[in-house]
Length: 253
Ligand code: PGA
Image (cartoon, rainbow, N blue to C red; front, side, top):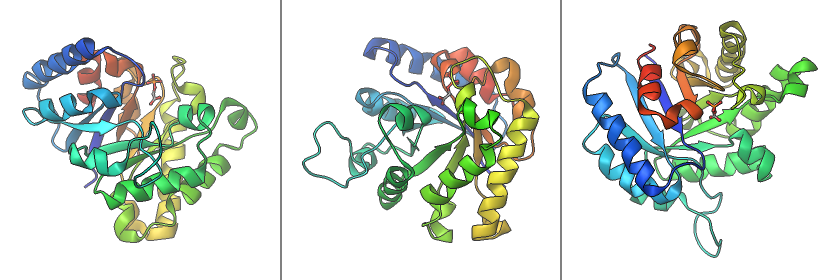
């Protein structure tokens, strides 16, 4: 009953020409691939390529997503991009609270909560990231950290709103490092996140929410991770920059 989602986070990579080529490759590969039913592919390129991505997506099976959004509605916020702008390009998903934004751009749980509100007001599904840094895992504090991020980023939402949200568990020590969480480590945290959602919104609601794993997910490890009962897909960084690898991950269900 939950959607399987494989979302590609391109981060700050690719020129316009390279981006077009990647999307073109993706569309060709998608045409020749049979995905499991209920598998949704989301492509999150940098802002300048969103319109192109959105146009291409009309003729294909993927949906366009953004990597970030302003926490403000509109106005004098130089350099920011609003949820209304994303909506006007028919952007379906938007990543919020990625650990790189938390670490390098000072995003807090309060910023995450505000961005989630902006997106939901414009019918865009937030993909809300959480996850502990290495020191927190070594101190055995991963559950506490993830609980705080989920509670403060999401628990102001109504039961109706929460089902529009996608959660991504991304242990920061696994992002871009080649070090993946073991399937058991991923399952433990995913089940914990679902239990938190169940406590707050009831088991039926929690059961509807897709929880993605992110952090060095690649064709060679996706199948094992996606086989875990509470892992509903992946947020893919490096491997999303290559159409064949990204598709191989999407086929891992
Ligand atoms: P990675 O990035 O797959 O390159 O580790 C994942 C992410 O940051 O979303």
